[in-house]
Length: 57
Image (tube, rainbow, N blue to C red):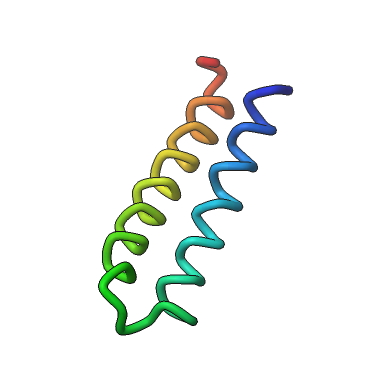
């Protein structure tokens, strides 16, 4: 149960960072790093979902 809460938090954070990078912060120096962080978080969240659904964790 805690893993699902953690995954939800990671994916929600990735969504917010991605929206910030393409929205209000677009064209600023922080947009690119935020986009990278959002991508890494999204991949990590999806990997954790895959691990959980495969029954490993």
